[in-house]
View 1 (cartoon, rainbow, N blue to C red):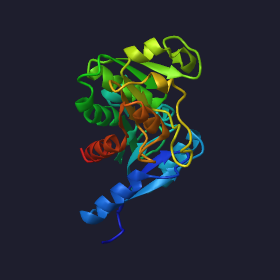
View 2: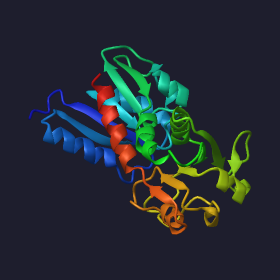
View 3: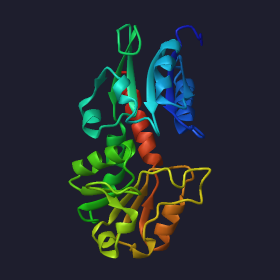
View 4: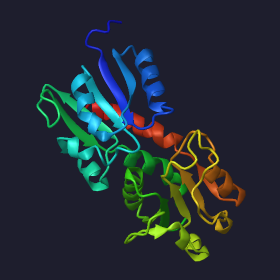
Length: 256
């Protein structure tokens, strides 16, 4: 297969210790004889993004991960309505040959496939959990999760280490709050490889078999958050299925 006019896709974030996306897409390209490759673009600052876009020939689409899902938005030429609603972007469609903000011949359109990936993944698990959820974290992934839960008619509140209006702190998580919120979603990087001995500081002793504890992380397969929740009888799930679902959606977006 010729590398001439090979389409380039990739993931921007920092750090990129492990990339499921690179392995997934490159295996897909090989299996389906697609003239493309998927690279990791580890950039230490979002200010490096325009240079990356300009210098990467045949760039056709990107995924976005921590910590740039919100920071990348000012560099984009257009936002899909769902991405605008979430206030976060994890997929960028690149329309080559059209002028954009950061490049003379590339127009950048932002999408959010996390919302649909998360919603489809958690939907079968929430029917008997009530209508209230806690979201651990306040970043771009948390915003996508909040929109997804809202689409499932579930009210959510974010939890942060920092006190701010409309957000709980970890110290405010009383037994009564845990009892009322039987869906808990971790969107923080706490527990991600190689820091597998970390987890969000919630009162795990208050969890019950009625709780669902969903971790967006997938490396390791079972995080400390999931282990501690499972020890209290809670149902647990990691983010691998969500990642797969959003990858399928990303491909559809790039080829729409």
